[in-house]
Length: 206
Image 1 (cartoon, rainbow, N blue to C red):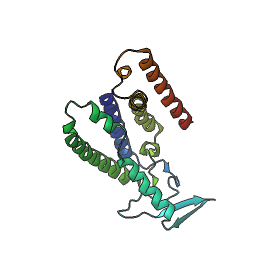
Image 2 (cartoon, rainbow, N blue to C red):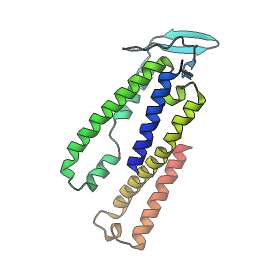
Image 3 (cartoon, one colour):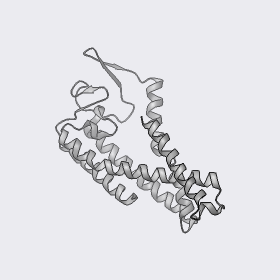
Image 4 (cartoon, rainbow, N blue to C red):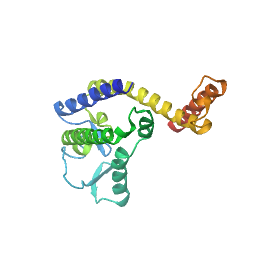
C-alpha cells in the first residue's frame, strides 16, 4: 500500500511541477488571483506580506503571527510521525532503524527542497498549499489531483491501522494472549479500537 501511495504521489508531484513550468502564469494564491499581486516574484529571504481588499493591494511588514505561522508550517512538515515507532517494532532487525531513518531524512530533504524550490520559482507569491491549486488550467489541476486521491485513502488506512494497533496494545497489553490470538475479546477490542479511531477522525474531519 505504501509503495502504491508513493508512486501515485510521485506522479502527482511531477505533473504539478511540469504544469507549473509550462503555464504562462499561475491562477492565483491566498492574496488574490493573478495578476492582483503583480508579476510572479521570488525572494531569497523574508517575502513581503501582501493584502488585497476593496480593490486595493497593499504591502505590509512581516508580523509575529505571520512569522510563527510560516515557522509552524515548516516544522510540521519535518515533525516525527506516529508511524516510525510502529515500523521499529516490526523490523526484522530493529538495530537497523537509525540507518533507515537517516536514508529517509536525506530523501525527504531532497524531495522537499527540490519540489518547493521549483514550484516557488514558477508560482512565486501565488503559491498555495498544495501548489496544484495555483495551476492556471483546470485540466492540469484535475490531472494532478487525480493521482492524489488514492494516496489519501491509503495513507488514511495505514494511519488508522497503526493507531488502532497502538490502542489494542494499550488496552490488552502486548503480552496478552488476546492481542495475538483469535479470541472474541481480541477481535472485539480490535474492531472497537478501529471504530473509535475512525469516529474521531470523522468528527475532526468535519
